[in-house]
Image (cartoon, rainbow, N blue to C red; front, side):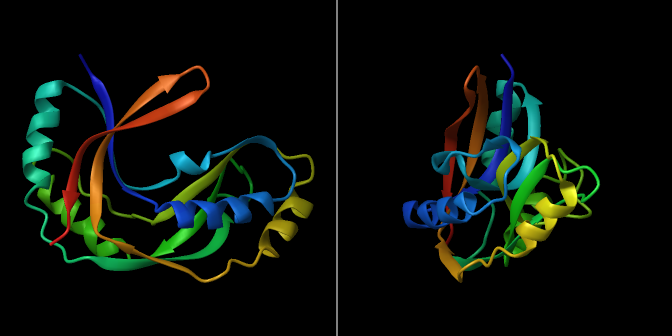
Length: 175
């Protein structure tokens, strides 16, 4: 049976609460804010794979050799101002762990050329007034949010009617 998997950093409860405050400041849009317990930083999206591949990935990820570090959430933004579908928070200082994971899995998956650390905080269906939305979005000030990273996870995304549920398949502690 296939599983839809990805590698991520999960957020401490206190950081989830701080991000919820930022979400509450978002300008009006039709769509959905990501539930705080589902917030995460995707380091690598793998996609649909067989159980055997999950085992191979698990072994490779045990080779990741990174010391614990801190990441900082910087600003709110969108990928494209012309076609707004995702509202995110940019994340600083996650490039090293992402590159290490990419390298460990390079025999299975291509290395990402343009990784941009971000937390998806909302998915947009439509916006009535794009210019006003962007102007108000740019006014949102993010308080300094820094938190320690001591592990990462291999997760499965299980699609359900009310939205995705993320199940941890394996947790890897940083050394």
